Structure formats: structure tokens, C-alpha cells
Length: 193
Image 1 (tube, rainbow, N blue to C red):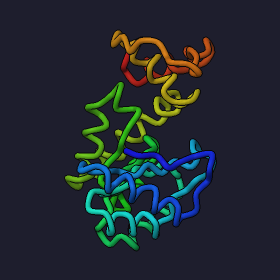
Image 2: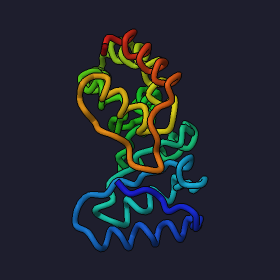
Image 3: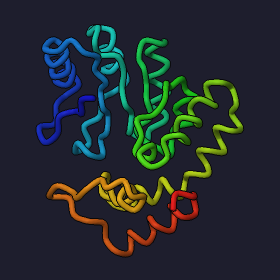
């Protein structure tokens, strides 16, 4: 999973060169990670993603956390099945699956792995109602897991569940007390506490 470079905002040509160089140095599958909100607005455009996957055998897909369904739909139309697309946003898994996505690379799954699995498996088995129920049941929990920047809330959630995820590395700091209560309330309502 390789994120787009930040600070020096590359053009699409520069992004293609960057990822191609990496792909040529390793012999394992690579997923591109498109998350403009964390990379200063650097966005891998659909044609760039398709080109990278078609031109590099080991670049197999993308974790998309853009939240831009028009862009994701354009990617799926251009890719014609040649790019594996995974949701990078836990609250948007079903819409991405409905566009042809493969699944999710999830924060939520750290605290409720069975539910995330069952949501995707139900969708893939054609049980859209069950899949939708799982997604919608989790909306408040997912929101609480992002009440501060990831991974602050999810580490707290795991600690609250007794998983001893440990402390955060700087510059991240512990979850604010008011946000801890928001998280605790959502976890309790979801049935995790």
C-alpha cells in the first residue's frame, strides 16, 4: 500500500514515474493509496490509475479514500475490470462495492472485524439487505472512530476493549476526554462495550 507523495505535489506524469520506479524495485503486489485529504490534495486521477495498473504487472489496484463517487465511477468505467478498487472510507463501502469495488481496507475492522467481513461477504453473495443493515448500523461507530485523526480514536477503542493497543507515537496525542466519551458511547450503543 503506497501513498501518493506529498509536499512536492507531482503532476500525473510525475506520479506515474514515481509509482513505476517503485514497482520496478519490488516483486510484490502494490496497491496505490489515493487519499488527497492526507497528501496536501495530491489526487491520482482515474486514467493515471488505469495506466499504472495496465503498465505495471505488480500494481494491482487502489485504496480509494477520495470520497468522490464520480471519480470512482469514472475509474471503474475506464478500468473495465483491470483495477481492483477498495474503499478507504468505512462509511462508503457499499457505494464502492456497487460500482464494482472488491472490498475495504478498514479502520472499523480493527474493532468489529466479523461485521466488516460479513457486510462485504453478504454483498458479494447478493444479500444486499443484510449488507446494508450492517453498514447502516455502524454509521455512528464509524463517525466516532474518526472524531479525531486516525489512528487516535481506533487505538483508544482497542484499549477500551482490553486489546492493549498501546500509546501513540508523536506527533499524535491521546484522544481528548470529550471525544473519548463520544467514542465510548458509540461503542456501547454498537455492543462493543
